[in-house]
Length: 549
Image (cartoon, rainbow, N blue to C red; front, side, top):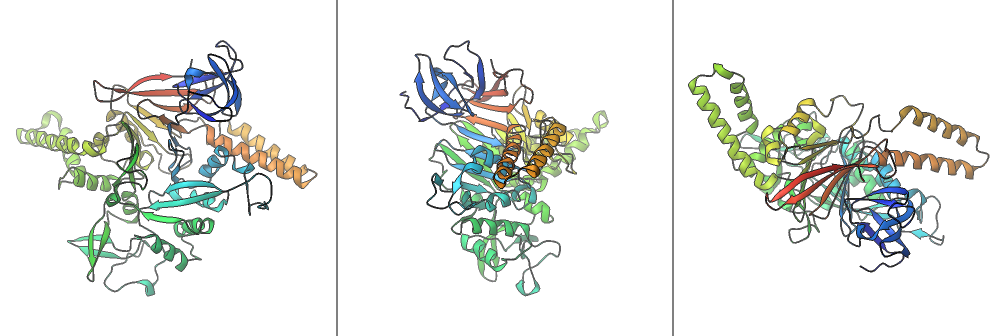
């Protein structure tokens, strides 16, 4: 590999130590991870090269450097909700959900240095000013479903004109105000939700008013331009930011995320939501089954993405619940049974213990055989190596669905100050019980840090108060703006550093890592867990935990 000054390179080792000098025993400057970006500074010896990486300059062993970018999947600590940031090997940026608050926006501001980015028309910057750049492009935005703790965080992102969303993917359910004049004769409307009209087919209800096209979403936004509906107004903010933004409705029929089809090295297969044929007044269109009340239906029809790069598979499934998992297993395992009902019957028989009679023992064996057969079929589509826990570790899950996933590692995105006590104790136990291998891994954005959002809440509060005092006392506007910028950057970095679970992979080697809040030394800043493909087992396995060397 030839080194060219100023070019980008990446860490090729599981982890590596950046050092002050080119010698192996030189003092550590920083601890680097597989896939970390670096810039070559033009100096090298036979064994080491001088680089800029993670805000530091230092020397790195040449054997730990590659010109091949890895896949990077970051599960951001956005508090309560989901937020995933992905950088592909060809440098495309994908956001899957953004929580409810501003944490994802602050992460992006830190990651891409947005506060120093000069964009014409923003903050008084002119086209003629030196150093002007285009807005930073977000290639793909996926809103798994219209729940506040998944989409509302996009509002501050779309409001920032230093960012530019290009494509927004959604499940077609668009909440909008429904007045009497909007109602169509023959459709049924529920008083407690605004998901649109329903048709009744074979005793079940299906959402008819799904937004299937880009034009339909733009039309809904234009029709309700002053709406108080937060989901629709969030989409409106994206259009205000980029009038050419494209809205794309995803379902199983879409098969793959555009640009990540089966013939690509990196694929995103769409396993849900599952639409069904619907007919109303002679018009045929795909519809979504009503799975329960508004919340159950919105959550249950989350977009389900299965990421695959070479041998590695990762599941990203929104807020699936028991009802939707029943439905998914019926579809993919080709069964008419509702798995949760089979589980309930099996568990009630198991609770009898030695008091079972012969008939009950026989029934229990039949149920176990039926569930095992469903798992075997479902694993052909659902088994993965890493999964994002559905619904933040809620208790609304099917044990059979977890068995079908059979992951080595589960990542839970949950937050403080919420009323559901996520992740639930039974969910944590089940993730471990139904995970693959001797020691299944469970990661949590909430548990990866020891205090609420910031590493030392009392010291941090005092720090912010000091910033506020200095801003108030600053003698000039320029000094005030500089201090405000410094304070915001400090907030951005605190959100970005602790609580995030990062996955790095080339499709063969894979690590999952979290930042240590109190590292013993500069060469041991990450807690790293490595997965490797075992050709004898024909699957990945967990091989080690490391806090660096």
